[in-house]
Length: 261
Image (cartoon, rainbow, N blue to C red; front, top):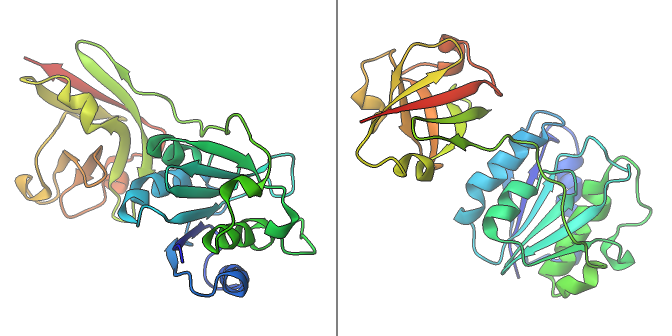
């Protein structure tokens, strides 16, 4: 049976995650269910989309990902299934799936309408249980992806500003702050690699120049640095402390990498 990975903003205090797992077990008992996170800030679509993008490649290639951060539950947004080769992404069409699905390479998009994929009666407040969990379980149990419902031509995109590159600079934004206070930017290693042979200095918010180093230990304790992290994105850090707190940075702040010969 195919594995199912869950990402929500439901927390673990209430019954929500347990109910989703119960519905999955009723249909696809043998499928392993893996928790990515249930600690997303309620309604934070961008954060959930980032986390899904960062981890989806670490799962088996046939994994079915269910992401439920859905402040518009029961609104006009569709319930969607996205096939990316052997992988599937299932959730609300509100942008939460877009970063990971775009990166994985979209093969096919379906609007979930098949009544076999629904838990009746369908609640207006809990589509994680009534739409997305059963749809994922049906696919895991052998239902053809095409049976989810009709083709959909595109998905809603998450509104992250694109990186801008010029001969002298790279400009992006802080898109995520992890629990250590590291500020992960939209600037990727591939952007920086275009400037081979040049040195770099990073500016963010009201900070002074920050060097790009190889690892935390290359900076003195409690000093600022930037690194290419495990995500392959540029991160602004403070060795042994929180860059967000210490440098006064927040998500959405502009980040500029200045290049020099």
